[in-house]
Amino acid sequence: MNSFLAPAAAIMNRMRYSQKFALITLIVFVPMMILATMLLQRIHDEINVTRQEQLGLQYLKQSRQLLQHIAQHRAMTGAYLNGDQSFQSKIMDKRGTVDAAFTKLKEMESSENTRLELNSELSALQSKWETIKNSSMSMSPPESLKTHTALLADVLDYNARIADNSQMSLDGHADAFYLGDILTNKLPLALESLGQGRGLGVSIAAKGEITPEQKTKISVLLDRVNIAIQSVKFEAKLATKHDVGLQAKLDKGFEEGAAAIAMLTNFYTTAFIDATAIQVKPNEVFDTATFAIDKSFENYDSALPELGALYNARIASGTKAMWLDGGLAVAVLGLVAYMFGGLYSSIETNIVQTGQAAQRLAGGTAPGRRRSHHSPHH
Image (tube, rainbow, N blue to C red; front, side, top):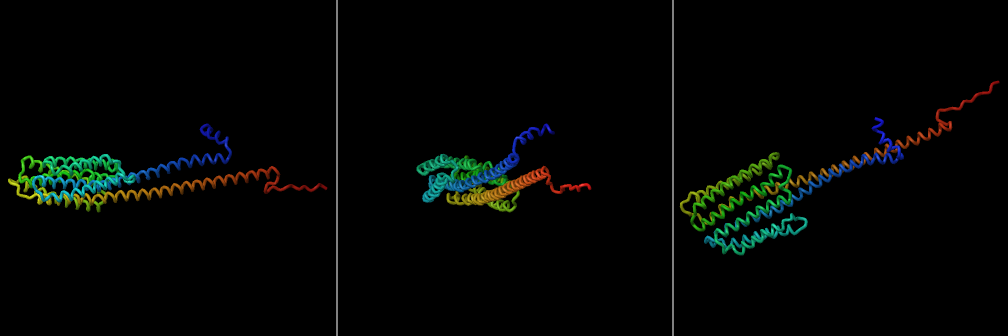
């Protein structure tokens, strides 16, 4: 044991008493301060990541406008190109709505505080939209449908980039991860399939005839929608596993959306798949399909603030933990410093008192010691 302690003893023997205490204090304090700083930094980083995810939600709120209204523009343009002139004024109004969504996204991307570094992707989307605005009214119906659908596929990719750049897609909390995946992937895919069916159905109704290939296409789109909705409902249950209130709220909305989609499926089956002749009007197809699609968009709009609430709660919890942990660290370090100071003062006092006692002993004046007086012998 002596040989083990010899190096430490050698170091201490080279130092004055105050230096020894300073060294021991550093050895204790520095690791504690480093650990406390690392803990607070980790909490701070988690808060910053969550704030970035909140920014992703703001982007999704606007890109959802693109998904909804470009899809409506596709259906309206298809009806117009197939001979229904009543959609012309609606098309012009819808363009204004899409332009406003692009403007909002541009403003967010141009601000340093709300930037996700997606300006090039957004500019590419806007350029394709401008091309559609300038030329879609003179396109053939299939070309218009194809061009709109390609743009909407790019909007879906843009959603995925929002999730990646805001770190929503990397969220380590199951509730936020699955809700985020519903909003960025699963539900938009279902909505786009519904939108494609509406665009095709309105064009068929405007033209007044349907091909076997178009019947097959509608059937495939409906199957794709039903699969996507089942996936949405499954992930919603995973997201709300530990929140019964949120689960009930989301389940109610998704059930209503599924019921609307079932009604639309029956409508398409009667009007197109099983029909020997097309008798429905374009406006009827547009309104019926839009009702079902809007129900799913209502689900989207309901889930969006719920995910925001999860982020807010996480930030509040992290901020509270940072203050508590920081306060506790300061208190512990302060207490340790206080006790070390007390120990130093106590030992120093004892040393002084010992020195004084030694001096008294050396001078023959130690307390309790009496001189002997001897009387002379007579």
